[in-house]
Image (cartoon, rainbow, N blue to C red; front, side, top):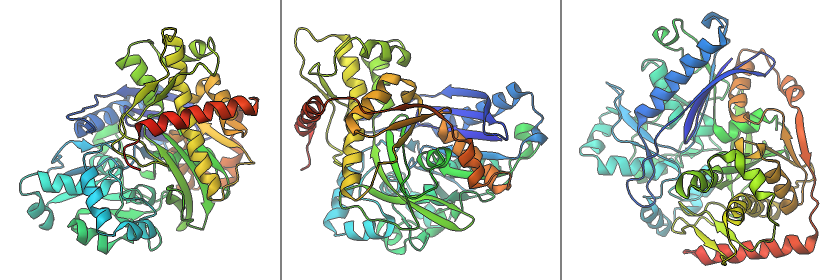
Length: 490
């Protein structure tokens, strides 16, 4: 099975065996564009070219004939917004990335129009620049004649999955899955259709929007010129929902937390769409063979990106792999706090204007303390999410399954268990987003069942809480104080 994992900073394609084991993979990073403070963009051609290259490279490395693949699964960075021409496939503007905050004032205006209740009840989301709707409206407003062209049906909107499906099928397929649709702030997660009231308010023609189908549906067939033979695309989910599937969290009450560029904690709530009273999101976990499973989600914008900043911004480390040994050299209560609000704060604060800061610096502060504070910031933010979910009635007694590159770090795994006061389980395969996409292909082709996927999940290591409560509380209070200092919106 081929799984394309189109992420925020790189694109990967992984070849999985029919036992869910990774065989070969190809990965390529691409440029991030920051035109203004709080703006984040990608060149759509970078997304496409890295997808094409890694897809071809992974197949070539595997030495497996194209005809032997069951199909292709796609998982992608969510909320990132693209508009392109129906006739040519040419993008109208750069992709506006999920982290982008340019529509902060527009979101504020929508809240003054008393739309918040409608948005939360229909889409499960909060009005925030994070989601695709206001990004799409911005592109249509800022590009000459775009509104008129959209009304004439000349322009198409999609999240990254839709754009890649369109390109892979040479413009024959214009589809998205329910998980990506549920992150646009335009999709009614209860009726499972685009919401007319929101489309009208944002002046978005329905003809611009893709057809929404199950995660394990048939999304079209690839152009035979790409790999030398055509393959079905038959599994698609946004990266966090794909990780939920990759972690085999099929039972209500099971939860996973993924540490990529950002960190996302998702709790399976079964067939009930629970509305949060603590500023978390209600979203679609997955829809398989027409049956919807809902989820509650907390989103942190900056997790692994903190380590990337330590490496590329401050240049105090050369690789992420060094951070474990560095953090082990300093005590947990070193007094330094990093609040990585580089693009605002996500759940449960939703403060787009907050900015990052380092607190507690003294003459003794060095690289060790700053690196440790960077890793701890991700654990503290997870604590914020877990606490909000617990207040909404979530029970984490079954533990938390974690994945993503950052949790290869044992120090981070232990720090999470200590601060969260729950058992943290790391699976043998930590790249669970791509694995989830592969599982969807297996489910579509009926090669896998949910029970079979459960049997594939294997624990690599469990971390049990072992921090005394007095020190834990001291650390958490220090974090809460640091966050309060960067807040702009109360």
